[in-house]
Image 1 (cartoon, helix red, strand yellow):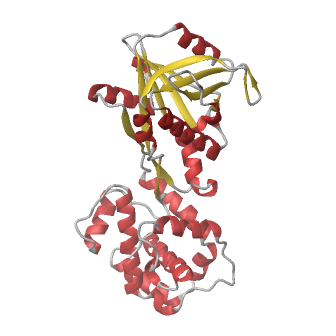
Image 2 (cartoon, rainbow, N blue to C red):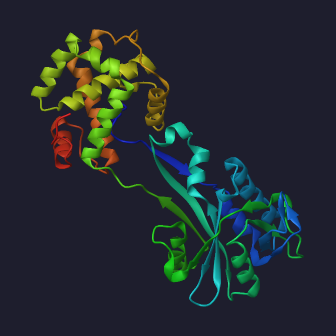
Length: 352
């Protein structure tokens, strides 16, 4: 059975380029190079930074992946480049898919405000340079004022300009000044474990029960205004509602479950969203709601769909979904246990 709570944003997993970590490792970066090239696109004599590879083929493949990220976002900033100046007088290079543009490539714009993107992306620190050079300082100064080119290069000095990327931004940090929750902060962990890569996960804070309550009611009124009005005059629903209230369920639980029964009937012709894939059901329901506008001609399901048994079962599914979202795992799905969990977390303290 599938539940759906209108007050929470479904988690949407966004995973970065899974081939990139192996490619950057197999390419064996040797050094960084800096300078200027005559032109690149519309740029005249732009500064460049290049990763020099021992394995030229893998290095080219690696930059082809970078170029794919940039082209997918239509922006070179899809490839995030950082330099961390270490306490030892050198610097570390950090390259990873920029998170916001990664989200844009994976989640349609209209859906982004309605989901919680959980981003997991590989953060690579492919090279440690022992000493800061004049060339590095020149590049650092140049990039304050103008766009630059990021590319790969062979040991013989050939630049991979066919897979190079035009960029406007580079992150520059002192080791002791790395922002705590930035992807670059993974360097401090990697430094202690002697690894060159780490998966970074960006998590979003959970909403309060009051925020969830407000969002639930706003979404219900936005997505299903006609259904809510029609349910006021549906005799079977009203009879079941009174009995469910006497069992201890809240009005908002009963109304939400009835709305879900209506949506399930329209999507699947059956209750409980039967037929939807369990793993993608939340996104499927949300996409349906966002792309479907209610009309007066939309009918409610037959009376049998509003029996106390069907509504109660849908309430249980919706409640489990809400508790999963806030990190709770009830020992069973009995009415008493679920209601107790909701009450402890403040979800039964207000009227809707």
